[in-house]
Length: 211
Image 1 (cartoon, rainbow, N blue to C red):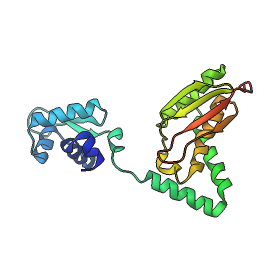
Image 2 (spheres, one colour):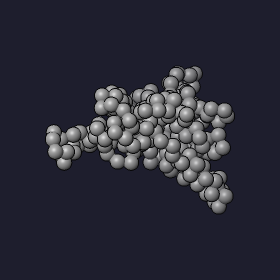
Image 3 (cartoon, helix red, strand yellow):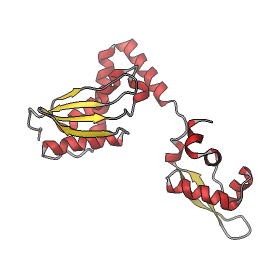
Image 4 (tube, helix red, strand yellow):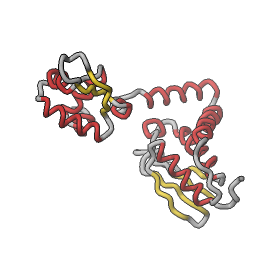
């Protein structure tokens, strides 16, 4: 049993796999899974509540009352294994081998700067730090903010790119650039790349934020 089945149960995972292939009605799902319509409705209700399944119109060629169609949501699709981390790690390795580590950091920082666009830039420095933390959370980080003698600390409990950062710590330069752009303050990366990687950044309140 894989982690997804442990989390959702075998029946709900099988239901998601069927919907990944094509839209289905309650009746067609029940027939394919060997369950009653009511049992499937219960699973569908749970999966919809969790944002993993969505309604997709109606099937009108049933000869009776139109039947609701269901589909896998984008959030549901993201539950299935992806090769993102492997591809990203290999891509960084290829760029580093061809152009050197400095070029990798330059490119990742450019991505971080781009990712910061659209993030609010409040006037008050502390509000900018909070905006930077929210931006990291939107990428999948779990971040706490604390005051320090020199400014603030963003402490992560995990890393949105943890599958890559242990072998490619240069990836942290992406988040570093994002935090720097949003806060407009000097930022020191203090990430833990060992075991289960955790993000951490020290923000120094030694400059006024730029306009």
